[in-house]
Image (cartoon, rainbow, N blue to C red):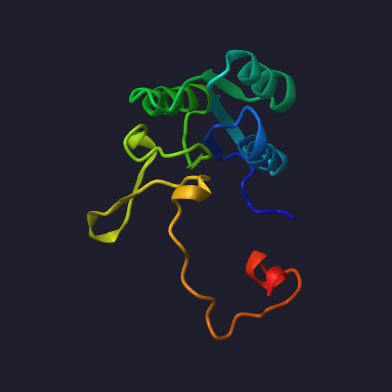
Length: 140
């Protein structure tokens, strides 16, 4: 599938293993450039250089400067930044530079932390309920 991401640049936090690494790999597979971070320098080096051919930065998102450093690394390496995926725990106060602003000024940060995620809205009435439509449909 071509998602039209070729040549675009993304930062992905928590990307030295697990879901973050899988997301970074999917972006690279689509032709995107990735700057990734993780806490363990060895894991970051292995994921970034050895596996993905990406820029890697050992950083803990609890450090308030880590988001800005990762953005700077992406801009230096690729000259642009098109998106960010935070695949770590609670980053609302730790990485404000990776936050997005919604209409009305409300700030939001994506997170893969299910324990803190609010329940989503119910499926719309026209939701397909097909076997491969979404995770809600597979369990219904």
